[in-house]
Length: 90
Length: 470
Image: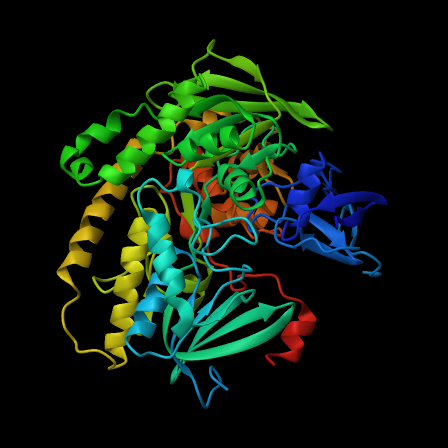
């Protein structure tokens, strides 16, 4: 059975144990965040949890490192725009 | 409960890469109650990444040309006496009257682990030098590409330029090929001549040489251009990411030759300029440091791998970048020394065999650093719009403004005035290059320490901080 998560509404399949970042790259997606000052696109850079460039929102929790978080079936993954505070009014 | 204030472990080892595995198994073999903490899902560190579900002892033979796969298999099979705690991301270590406490985050909650002696083996990440366009999607760290390939069998694109300096570029390039990608070129800033300065140490490093030759043979078979004294001086692209890289020949000082620029099509630039040790934890503890030959700030250790903080040992890249085999040797020495300190082994001198191997491998590392320096002229390929700090989006022009107009002459002042290094990564990526750039622009001495201290080594929520350890 193929496992998948939702990425901004589209279905992304993954192999068990893959990180969200690896699955997104395998699906041809290269960026999933915009920077908060200039709105520039970012994706995976250091790949090992050091640079925090690959942040995205997972099941409503912002600022998750795509290169570290393992994909799970049914996850709701969203691109992260700017500050990444999700629904927090701060 | 083991690790609690009333029942501390004998030895806590932080980091389950080559050094940490060696330290933990050595301490446990000598009867120490040992805990091994690591943020990843499985032990192995960056070097021994492997696909999920792979039997721990099964190492891809194509990535193991100097016998370290067997070393890993032996270390992993020896772990049954160690309390292995994976998915424990340590954010702080502190000294206490009776020893040390390591504070780890497990699914966002804090767990405190206490031990009488501490071995830190935090490893390293790719050193980066900014260049125009390095913040485009598709520009990745060489080690990031290797992690994706080794663990997830995924490449970040199809046509890859591998760039920077050092022997690590070779396995990264062959990884691209073995995972179905095309290496457009390998741009190596060094010229290779530095390697012949110490023939004696090369004779004793046949495994490393065999490894390099095997990788070079793969590149030759696939007709990959290996360009010496060449750097990627610009990544070109737009919203879709990188579409091309600009290569330039470097002169003696490492400045790009005017007129040598040429553009090659690619969708990935994988860049690495050696490695930056991860010093957050040892610096937080107050360990004394020194500047290594490659410009890295590293922890100063004595012959037993002990730091200036009694009872705290450091092994592997954080004591000087030298590769996995050196990390294993240092880890064994650190584990042994911690054991002796706790009185669990007689206070004999360390085994001569380990000391001799460490000496040889450190000489090899010194040779490697001399042969693959950061080219001093690298700021010549920057322009004002080049991003210096990826997190806070600080440009080179912003840095130059506070240097020329406001008279900043040290990286810390530049950081405070521009926010360069104050973002999510806390200067892990831009800190060292900023220190290099400020030294070059102001003719002051290079001071990476100013950008290296980080009291919080991993992101934690205020909630976890308020709740405290479970």
